[in-house]
Length: 155
Length: 155
Image 1 (cartoon, each protein chain N blue to C red):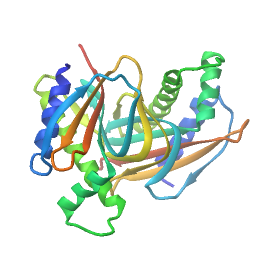
Image 2: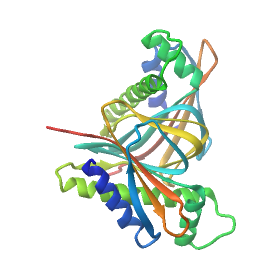
Image 3: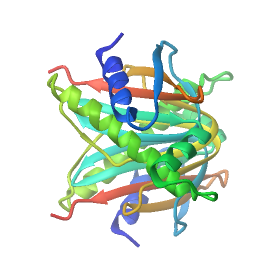
Image 4: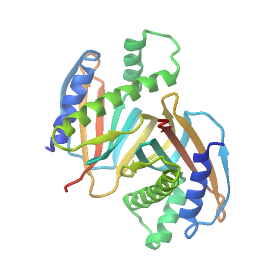
């Protein structure tokens, strides 16, 4: 297992710890292209480590998480949910950035963006690291995934 | 119209000029979230200009463009098409990066990734520039879109 995988697992657990109780995570070895659906935040990074981290929520869990943070609302605008998913993705990627900086792989983060859809696939060019993890929300059994494409500078 | 919009228009025309003949482009004023579908390359950037550029191809045009570059093939693996779309996105974003550097907005590019799907939406947090352009391929009338979320550092 690549070191980045364990850093991402720790990052997700730390960021979500006060918000959603998470059961065990398990890394997947499936090669991209990866199937995803729901509400997917992404934050890119450049530097000694270059790439992108996606954080994929099922729509229902994205809505529930937003309710937990902003208070329940019957007709929540999807933009508010996108903001929350983007911010979680930012926090997880920021946590990974800090752990990788301790290993000498400094990077800068780009702005968070959010994609929504059903039956999407994510791919990157050959030669990049491609690492995925799944986490189960204890209460509902819903699954959050992280998907990382990264290239490390080896100079 | 923001300067970045005209830079992106020029970037697309320059990158595609030897490959696909393009008719007029037209910027759109629609606010995000934006609807997209097909094969969508994305390249992020960080620095004085931070954000992401998406280049959205209809599937048929992505396949035809790949045929033009790699030679026709009856059963083309989608990974090869993804590589071509990723590389075009890289070239367009690199062209924009160079034009923005001339204006003092230096940035570094991340790795290209590719998303495929139907009925997807793209969104970013409030406060970021959100610029979109459409281009028509002369031969087929198919439409390529660019979508940019960006934040400029104003120090």
